[in-house]
Every structure is written in structure tokens, then in C-alpha cells.
Image 1 (cartoon, rainbow, N blue to C red):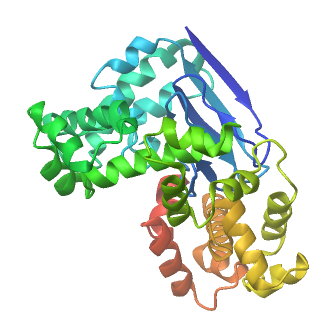
Image 2 (spheres, rainbow, N blue to C red; image 1 turned 30 degrees about the vertical axis):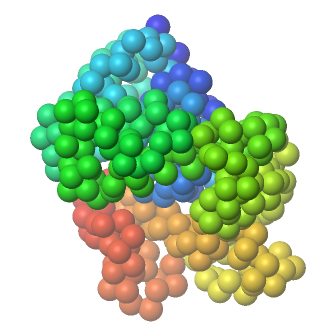
Length: 350
């Protein structure tokens, strides 16, 4: 059974994923946040999220289609898990490179045919080949990830974890380093920290209980590790993430950026508008949104640029309207952050 829902999400609201889901963003110009990481280059992608993850939309103009897949057994399939078991980034399919995917996600076909989108997307994922690995190597990489998911709470050292993996016949340490660019130790630590963030943000458990549940030797050590990774104590992080209350600061700063980003890039301008010092607003943006204020300004510029280019505006006009002195300065900025030139973007989006 499939549940297909089209909706306009509330800005900065946490949407917890309760079943394996495909998120297709139909409209929107802002960035999104998935599991405490912010993403801005999500356009023309089908995003796959696993049960237990979350997504936030950091702008008010999004329209989203969500497809929930209720057949849990489907996701034990080795070829399918690659869509949902994110190793170092977001799991997605590039719709610009997958004509079949675009066809299945069209308004008229999605209700009837979306059960097949998983199989099509799996084939497309292997074709995209994000880690430049063979199919057999991918199975080792994702088997390793599964073992870490099952064992990370057991307070094992990276050497002990590697030993467990090697006993399964995998030379995973070398393979992960070579293909993914990450060690088993870093993968274990990243998993434990991500689960720590979720427990602190989304539950009312005390810190001692969380540290014990996640395999830390004591709560003092957990506090040190947490602060080293986030710059905040667990209590500060829980208060600032603001899961239930969702104060107005985030919405206020996003509204200002949307209104003024084409003309104003100075941090001081936004600090004055919010009646804060540059240091205070920078710290609060970083604390609340896990990103710098400067990066938010760049995200708005990129989002507006992509929208204007997709509407047929010339590169010169876009550069001028966004305050760049020369079109080539804008083109360099655009390619630096999106890895494609404005001309290439227009070619695929017009």
C-alpha cells in the first residue's frame, strides 16, 4: 500500500519520517534540512528518507509531494537499501538524468505507478554511481553500514568494530577509505553523534540516560564529546533546537534574507535589522540553524539565480539584478557552489 500526499509544509517545522518515503519537491526556493544538515542543491532530485529521519523546510514557499512506502520488507533488499541508507550525504536520484523517474513522478501517473519508482530509482542510483564502485563493492560498503547501525551502541572501539566487519569476510576499512573517503572509526562516530543529536533534540530523556543508551562510558564524557562536535552542551542544544516551540527568530531572519538578499550582503545590515550585534546574530544563526549567516545569504542568491535562469532570464540580467559587477563574476560564483555553469543549468531547466 502507498500513501501519496501533496502539501505545503510549515517553515522550520520538523517533519519526522514515520515510514520509508520519497520526497519530491514540486516548488520552493529555499534550503532544506535533513538530520541536522542543510542542503540547497535539491532541485530536480527525488529524495529518499528512511524511517526515523526528519526533514525541515527553511522557506515558506515549498510545495511537496511525499510518497510513503508501507512494505517494510522491501527495504531489506540489498539493491533497494542504497536509496535510504545514507553514508555521507543525502540519498537522491537526479531526475534530470532519469527520464523514467520523471515520467513516474508526473502528476497524472504517480497514484497508479509509484510502486515501481523504487526499482527504477535503484537502477538509476547504481548508474549514477556516486562512489565510483562496483556493485559488489557497494554491497560491502552498505553491509558495513548495517553492521554499524546494529552495533554502535555497544561502546566498541573502532578496532573492535573493524574486527567484527572483517570476520564477515569484508576488507571494509580499505574499501571505505578508497571509495567513500571515510574510515570505519569516523563512520561509527558520525552515527553515534547523529543519534545523540536526535535523542537530545526530540526526547525529554535526561543526559545520563541518553549517554548510557548510546554506549558512552559516562555522562561527563558524553557532554565533552557532544560539545566538541556541536559547540554546545546537550542542554544548550536542546533549548536552541526548539523542537516544540519554534520561536520566531528563524522565520524573521529568513524573511529578511528573502526581501533583501539581492541588494544587501553585509552581515551588519541584517544585524541592524534584528537589533543585534554581528557577533550575536552570527552565533544565534549558527546555533539555531546549524549554518552561518553568510552561507544563508549565498543560498538565497543561488535560489533566486536558479529561479530566474529557469524562467529564461539572460545570465547578464541575472548577474545585474543580483548585484554582481560582471557576469563572469556571477558565473564563477554559481559554478563554485553548484558545480555547473549558469549556461549548463539553463540548458537542463528550460
